[in-house]
Length: 163
Image (cartoon, rainbow, N blue to C red):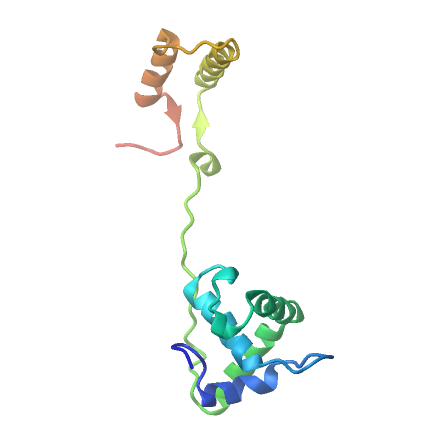
């Protein structure tokens, strides 16, 4: 048994809720369940699954079958119900994922001045034209430098109030 694998008592709670295959030999469900738990505990790709759990593709196929059949949701509900029946669950405690995803400033509704947008598009077109002709500008044009200076001096409005 590897570190993190289910104990016999934990497996006794989970085993009755896992479906058996309809045909073929009965697989080692405990080994496959431990493999799925290992994969999500470590965050590694399926192909990096240790060989002691069997072929990664077999474990992945079993995971997909369980996921599409709703086995994990049913298992979670059954384990919570069992813990509540034993008086081992405090159902008033709830954990909410508080992950933060930062959005690009365009997603935040940043508004640019119309003249600034026009000037930026013109500078981009000029740059694109030089690249198409096989030339590269050695220095930025005066118009581009003026646009950038305007942006740094507050030439855009992101809706924030600055004191």
